Amino acid sequence: MEIFQVVGIGLTGAVLAVYVKESNREIAVLISLVTGLVLFLFALSQVGAVIKVLTELATRANINLFYLTIVLKIMGIAYIAEFGAQICRDAGEGSTATKIEFAAKILVMVLALPIIMALMESVLRLLP
Image 1 (tube, rainbow, N blue to C red):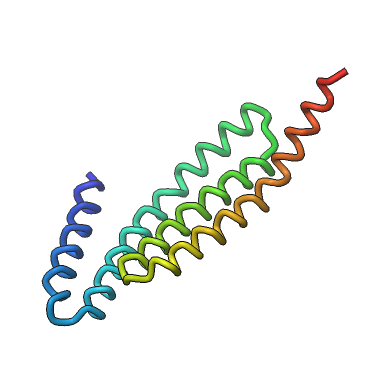
Image 2: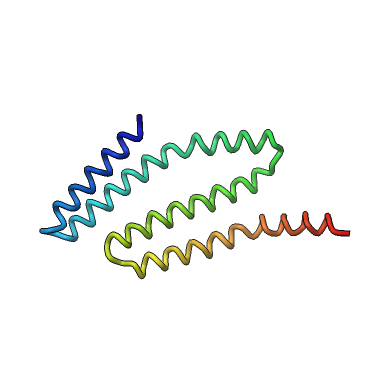
């Protein structure tokens, strides 16, 4: 099962980082970064299957794929921003992490505008 690989890589990276942190903090941060990147890339390799299923479901439900694309982009922004912010926090840069999260929220709002507009138009059509 893949979860054993994920946990194994994560635990190995964490133990290594804790062990090295006492003698060299910079290398420990680098180990955490590489561990996180490996786990992120592993998870990313699984996303293709999810996107395929969601696309098939949206097509069957006659949902405009434009909106599905927006939702998937928003999910991507959220995951990437969280990953980046956590790396910054691990490196002791909480302020930078907060700025990454803020920028991600703005990007999500901008991307969500077409969905919000379509929703508003639908509501306006229902009103007399």
